[in-house]
Image (tube, rainbow over all chains, first blue to last red; front, side, top):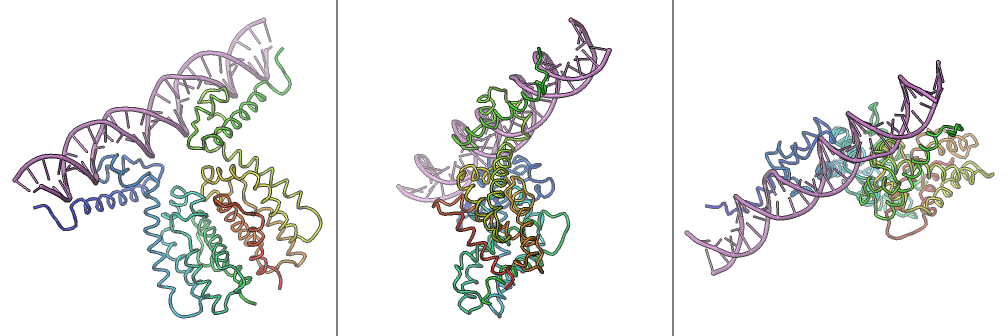
Length: 201
Length: 201
DNA sequence: ATCAAATCGTGACCGGGGTCATGTTTTCAA
DNA sequence: TTGAAAACATGACCCCGGTCACGATTTGAT
């Protein structure tokens, strides 16, 4: 009578990972990252401490898991939201705007990831966490170059990198700022800075 | 016969901190940051483990100490080197160039600091580590605005922030890249991107 | 010279992240 | 159905960063 459909193990594994990740998120939100122990997480999930490390290699890995999961979803959503008609350049701006307004709803989480879940090289050189907009930006920039909206002389990857740098810096600063302001506005301001140099005349 | 000049304690303190910081640096270089224990550091410095924490609040604080010390020195050097005559804009570019070529000599150290010594918010929002060029850039940008080299409509602090973002991103990427290339070139390329939008016409 | 107070080195100790040998559960082949 | 092998949960254990109570050293005043 063993549930043959899709293996008992497979589903149990999935469920456990999910329980761990939800327990972790809840506790992090309630007591902070440093204030939460792996033991607490596993107990809240009804498991033993050692089990945690069968699902996540380290304590902070759960933050990145969370990050890529949520942020990836946001990115997709933003990508489709901003995929209406209009110039590629317009799409690019709308993409950033949509991303910004999505992230604005989860400031605490994003802030947590930046503070404890991701290292400087991972954010700025690699891209653990999936925060980078470079891949999407690279695509849109190439499009915009083809349509003549952006100076085609310039390396699209370099432009995308620059955009990414500005985007990430503003995102981090917005997370850390005690005053709350519109991330979206700041971002468009920053991007315009670049665009005025990038746009053909 | 107690050495009255300048207090026995004072000098001993200075010497101990120096010994600790040199021992730490040597060990980090030899075995990596994670591979080095505080106990090893203190023993190499001829002290007991607990003493370490009388001089540095945490293990990674020694990295930042190192960082601010060295980077600060580099910054000053670069600032004076680039302080020749010429346009403010030229000074700005020369400042970045000088900083870059200084840092190029200490890639391993800088890399170490980015990987283990500084958090994302500290680097991008605060400025632990003294890596930020924002303060210096802000000054030079204001000058350049007064002389009409840079569009005076734009917020100088925002421009400085943008410059900082581009600078830090390129610095981090250069540190992490397996291929070695000229940081200086990359930086000037990036800055030109911004300038073409910033410069008045 | 003397001594009380302040400073600081010291290492036993603690808490928590991460490992691993063990026993249990699941799977799959016969 | 059965049993060997693979997968995995478990918690005792290790290691290391950081704390702290103690004792030694230094200081400055008398």
